[in-house]
Amino acid sequence: MSNVVNPVPPGWYPDPSGERQWRVWNGTQWSDVTRPYATRDVKREPTSTIGLDELRTVDALRRLTQFGILAYYAGFALLVGLISHWPGHARPMSARVAGATLGAGIGLSLIGALSFAVCVRGLRGRWTLDALIPIVNTFAASFWMSQRLGLKGFEFRLFADVLITIGFVLLCASQPWVGIALAGVAFTQLARAYLVMDQMSGPPRDLSRTS
Image (tube, rainbow, N blue to C red; front, side):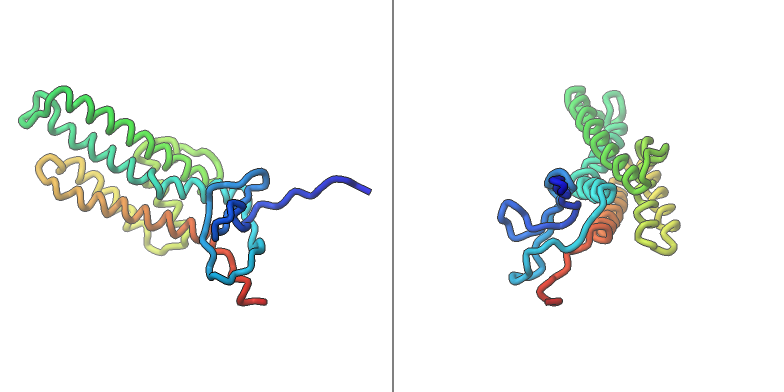
């Protein structure tokens, strides 16, 4: 008789911490992907499985929604705004403030760009050139998330996002209000990331309704 114990498959299970929520087991350890129970009386049983690749992609999307998008666009806006106020220009900021702003902008942009890169890698299943190029990978993420959701006519929205980003770079110094349009681009990406994450993981079934 074999003494080999079958490993527990990846999937949604009751949180071992005792919290009233589901947590994903990735086959070797608990991840930090969680969902609350659907009802107070839901039975504590595993409900669905999720592959390791899907789990990594869901985790990448979760990081993108938590801080990646905010970090990228905050850093991007700081860097673009800094250009028009760099020492020596018509309305310069002090060298100390400019240096601090430059460091913050680069740091935030790199964090966001890395989050987008990992997200594109997860959506495509491999590392590709569009995942590795900063700025490009933000639009690549929008493209592949829209593909995953099966949205129709998303190419027009993606083209508009590209134009808005270019317009922000060109007009930020004289028309600061264009930052609102750039925030709209970030909001669209955030909404699509949440939708893809929900599509891939899905809320665990309420077993109390089927028993």
